[in-house]
Image (cartoon, rainbow, N blue to C red; front, side, top):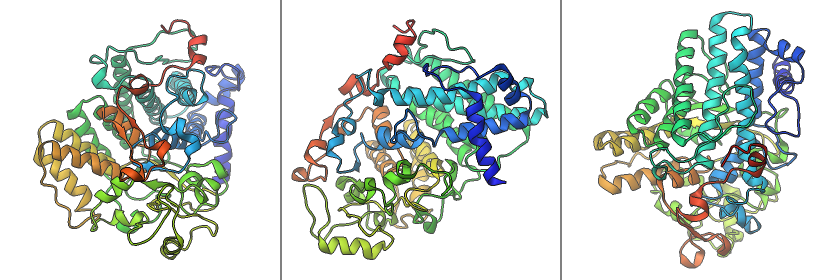
Length: 507
């Protein structure tokens, strides 16, 4: 039965939208196909599975673009402050040098990917009421489609729009808000209008989830907690701190923080605090181009064997010795390694294999190498997390700090770090800017490798400041750059030429 469902998952995407030279073609292959897909709510539920699958498939005939995993790795991890990989040939991407190159596939990919999800969601939102089936079922799948649309517009806004603090209260240009099945010319909405739509979609989704009385069956399906989690992340980015705090608490309800054993299990399988993720299995993966094939320490892919992913030395040095998260990275203290690259010396390499004997036999360990992410099977099989309760505690802590609820902020930090047993010696007593710095440090640590680094720096207006070994860091010299918030169009990706050529109403 599971295999049948997986096959139908793929087919539901294929029948919804035909391949086309026009990347915004959201017209079905034929009217009979549209009738078939939307004739019953059961079929629409399969279409939702199809959108789930869109988050983990290959795009643009490129082996590297793998859905949401690419967004996390190339757009969140690589350009940030705390994620080192010795890919000096990728310095243009890692250093953020494509944001104004409107013909670049790297600039185009997120636009293409998220608008494809939006197009599929729009088709469901527009057609669901015409389908046969119980109203509760219709409410639930419509809520899921609204959740997907809200998430996609929010993610696009982080990349292609100014940070909120630089947007003149949202008056700056936003996105093309396509809310139905039309693909015609449309001007840009303002950033404020984008957030208004994201909020509305989430409010509507939460109402429909509630009225349906239904709950999801699998972690990869959106539900009300997922809508709350997206709301929390969007609100903290919009500097809407009261709403961010409320939604963060709502989102983590029913999702207690994971155990220490689960924390050390490889971040590849849903556990108590996974609010939302994407499915991965041996018979449904992208092989050497999946997220875990880029990061899982035990993968046999060259992306890992030769270029393991490492934490920055600066962040590692901030982790207390009592914190279990420090043990997820290869500590080079007392060992030798090639300073310029990070390649472990003989003794440190032996230490890595002793600690983690499931390292692939030809792996080349590095100082500060990560052991947080592990593949379930070769080359990179694993479920992919999108939202965890940990993030919700961090959002609450930051929101309450901004609202001058210092005890509330400290309590959220203690709940995450001490009460969870991540660090039994932890006790947050800091105030003022020291408390904010503490929150930022623990966001970097707790969410390391999960695609947040660059997005956090952008919304805060903080600089990228990577240090070479000469200056006390561990980044290769070509990657040891400083990028202030004004660099590269204020860290804002330009709209791709494929959109502006197609849509002349964009100024």
